[in-house]
Image (cartoon, rainbow, N blue to C red; front, top):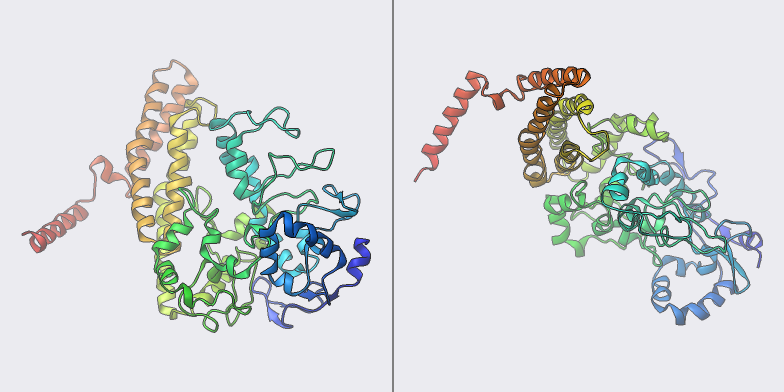
Length: 493
């Protein structure tokens, strides 16, 4: 059966309510869209042929599909995996032209609106890490060229293949015979670059072959990637009141409801999806996870999301952070009053300002001034690792902790470790570089060392850091001494 002829037989119906408002643009969606939920009157002959074999060969896949909404709509193997001759990853399989990979472009045949939103999100650009500083660690510092494949005859690091690429996505490579290179497949990284040129993997969240909305709504799904030392959102969520409420009341969450509006279909707790994606009484579901985020806390300094979206060429560059914050506050208002919401954001913004002002801005400048005194190879200096972990690990943890109300991650895993390493490792390493530079006999290094020392002195004599050199303001010192005595008199046994 020809794919084009097959598609012509599918009846499409609108999947979204006419007039619903998208928070990104403020315009109606669902009007004139060709994408939508659909069904077939019966399971196709091509899919029946697939089932005959795969029910025996892959019974778990068959069972997952049988529990899906796709099954109820008579959408099966062929409808998703069918391809056209000439597609990069197409091959003949028992007389049918199919592809192993089902890309967002394939999903858009029916879920056009959702895919369009996803393409506008930072999730779709996650594979950009393949050329970033992070990947230098996995490819060079941690790894080697030991994994040799047809697409990587000079070798590739298995640390990157099994680590970074599995969350961020690989660039899927196709062999001459149509098979998929094992360094790049299997892979369900959310920013995967597919053979058809599309970006992303819907199965990163809607795991095949059940493609369950309930499963995508569960915080454990986000935990595949959003955990660990540099972005522990899953652990932060579990620590927060939101996570505590969810795991105590999971059976009240109504996760399998087709309509899942906070305050109407569930009220026990929010999940990651609730806050970042799912519907409220005023907003529809969105697959652009940046449309409710008012700070981007990924980089050395926290910046507004429209700034980072502009660098990636995303349409979010035209959506100011105030609109995004309003979108998130709409979610918050399902459970909290406006005063509570406003005060939370005051606390959160204050933590961002603390991190940026006290550590990120001066630290970044000091690190830059130190470079002429360092070995030029990335991560060949101790200070490379110290500074990287201050902003990339500890700084992110503190900022993410505050954004999601995780006090332990904000403080003990965050600001405490930032301060400890800033004062006990970063500053001493800078001073070592100054000392070596001054005694080097190299005029350029001597000049660089003097410039760096002047900036160190400026930073340490600033109001944020002068306590470190014993120059705390006398009034503050007296107030702290008085508070310590009061504490001792209150609790001393």
